[in-house]
Length: 192
Image (spheres, rainbow, N blue to C red):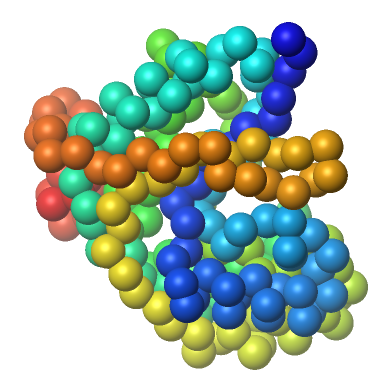
């Protein structure tokens, strides 16, 4: 069957997603049109194609344990000099994203994954482009703001053409997250 490269993310909804994607392309990021605007929960990960049903079952279980939560983006940040990335900051919903990504990557699940850097939810708007263009992205989006209710996440597969395509959405359920799952923003549970 072979392997596939998957990722799990929260899509930035319209009209925000398209606007940020167009801006990313305008800064000279050639990958912009192949990557839907998102907040990563599982970075690109290679898995056996036959493992996809187990991955989907795991993601459905994770999503069922979370409720919708507010997401708000505001201003810019950068990972430079460690990584050539400029991003829009997640200023509300970050703790819930952190909770979700830990469950998606859990060692007992089908996609255990160690991260190269500590998890920091964000929306990439420039990656691996000229420094002057990175500076321009950082400045031009410094007052960017958007908000929406996050109601789920999706599984994506990267095609041989480098384009990421959505395989399936996982809407949040109404199950209560047990207290031992960890506290998040303002002492509330994910999605509260």
